[in-house]
Image 1 (cartoon, helix red, strand yellow):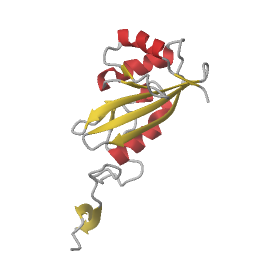
Image 2: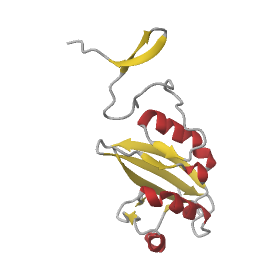
Image 3: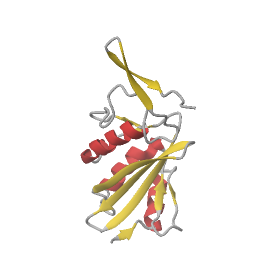
Image 4: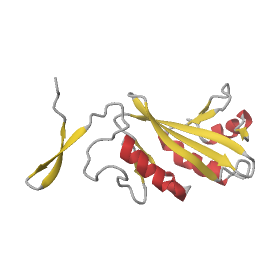
Length: 166
């Protein structure tokens, strides 16, 4: 089961990362950080011997229409400690640093999020679609997603909005 990141640790982080916020009232508290401070914060969380978050347990993204929220769930095997880190990305600029620079094993999950949610991971070693066709112009898990119809024109596959059946 493990324990969750404690408020005393947050206070240590806040001096180094001013944008960091912490919801200590929650049963499973979360850190909120700006996209600019995310990568240095993650390096610190992994490399600091007080926490030693050596495992990225999960990465996901949530579409709230006005913004995309990146959710990173970290685990420290040494201290059996969990931490969730969240970053809000404005809908018009869904870019964030790739965590492959800290945890190389995140490559596949970031590609999946890129493909289905449209989040672009800066400095990712292989940023390409993983489930949808390479030329598919939409992201199926976004709330504004409208399925596209494939059509072959002059031997070239193109994608078009579906015609209304009404």
